Amino acid sequence: MSLHSRSPSLTRIRTSAVDGHDSVPGLEKTRSAPSSVYSLYITPEPAQPLQQSSRRRRKPRRKGLRLTLLFLLVLGGFFLFEWRYLSSLGRKFQSRKDDSVKHGATLLSQGRQSPKKSTPPMFERLLALAAHALAEGDSKSEPHDLWEEPFKEASKWKPCADERPANHLPPPEPKDSSGYIMVSADGGLNQQRVAVCNAVAVARLMNATLVLPKFLFSSVWRDNSQFGDIYQEDYFVKYLKDDVRIVSELPVELQSLDLSIMGSLLTNADVRKESMPRFYLETVMPILLRNRVVHFDGFENSLSFDPIPPEIQRLRCRCNFHALKFVSRIQRTAGILIRRMRDANPRWGPIEKDSHFPSHASNIEKVLVENYSGARGIAKKGETGLISVTEVQNPPSRYLSLHLRFEIDMAAYSLCEFGGGEEEVRELKAFRELHFPTLNKHHESGKLPSAAFLREEGKCPLTPEEAVLMLAALGFKRSTRIFLAGAHIYGGEERMAVISNLYPNIVTKEDLLTADELAPFANHSSQMAALDFIGCAAADAFAMTDSGSQLSSLVSGYRIYFGQGYLPSIRPNKRRLATIFANNMTIEWEDFEERIRRTVRESKRVLVRPTARSVYRHPRCKECMCH
Image (cartoon, rainbow, N blue to C red; front, side, top):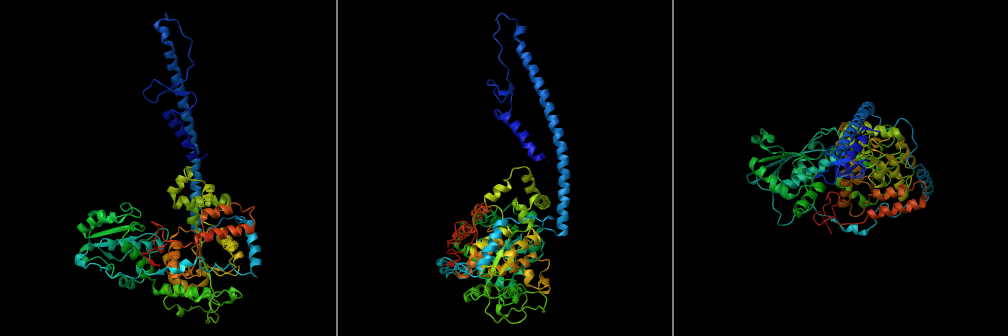
């Protein structure tokens, strides 16, 4: 019994006594008392003759008083015993906690992310059935809708956020501006991208001048990259010049001001998530007009999606889909990555006649990578088995990208279990204690749902095993080329071996690029994430395991906007998948296959952006696309 699990029971005993419940035996509420007072239950004595002396009439009261004192003495002894017991238990708990924290620190310092002991993979039976099905599927054709949108309605939506109406008003001159807006964006690459576009929208909304956004250093991402290290500054400023005036820094006379003392420094505590336009106009605007500058520190999802003026909504899309272009260094390396995913290198095995990608799928590559046809590797022969030095003679092959959001931080934060037994539980607990102490405290107290409940509700991230089982059930052949995006997979090589046994052509950017090609991006996780972004967005099909992640949301939105209905994204309903996987010990492969396909097909329906949902993820709306 833990310290945290026992304390609530004591609280319940005391609370029940106050509320008048029958939780404490031997106590009952005194009806005549004006407040919640309790006394011992005393069996009524036979009625005494009226001639009793006053002394004898007072006897029951004295007896009751003695019993009350006796009860209080016993109760005090009980609490003293409990206190000593819990204190000793707490010392033991703290000792185990310290050992767990030390264990977690050791894991992080050594870079180990998988349990020491070899554990059987999750869904071992289904994996065996999948291997058999993939072996049989080599001679069969893939389902026709794997590499295209199943609903033709998708092709009717065209990108048009770059268009401005005839009555569009340019931004104000400096003398007419409301002031200057500074933004410090938190998070990783994709969170910062959202923050930049929201900042542009807020600047337009408030008739203000935007200072080029700054990126905060994150203890999680550990990347000091700034806007100009990732995106083309000049292109960004020039493209949006008719919408918002953007400058590189504050005027000299404003640079030395203490914004905190002035009341011009606004943090996440001041600006609620998805704040309404009214908040900026009624609360922030007076500060801006008074001090000429406002600094949003930690800005991200700080502007609502509805209700919002159509012009501001369109500007957000214009920023995200048109104004933000990666710097040439990132584009060039991403172009090399894409070429190697599509080339005829012998490492991929025999090229099937139906594996060539259609010409219209290259449109998004041209948007993401300027001069894509000129992207060439600089590798020397033998540097990696995936490098093609010579020109590709065969038509380029299609590939699937998979964002497998299953790093140790995701696994620990989810509070789920993933088949690793007690060793895994201890390891994830140690990570939470180091990085998510508040979450761990609530988890240890028993206030949060159990791992079993979370999995049943579809709240757990898909494991690598679940991801490849889904792909196999959908009908992707064993020879499919798969670009795997993301950082280190929790479970390490042991877990990767399980999925590469089913799909041997699964690779990462580290497999595709040489050490020299990756060197400029070393220690810059956001720039590395940009390579993943392009590799996923340019794929012929994109599968995600966590639709709530920013990378998956932005990539799927990008593919909707530029894909012209030819670039499908697989967004599984995790709750439905959880129900299917719950029967993994009994379900037959044909039934499993049919249920997975039906679930995924439902998620591909062409829908107009739901109210209050992100335009970055759901650009099918009149403000961003034309129909």
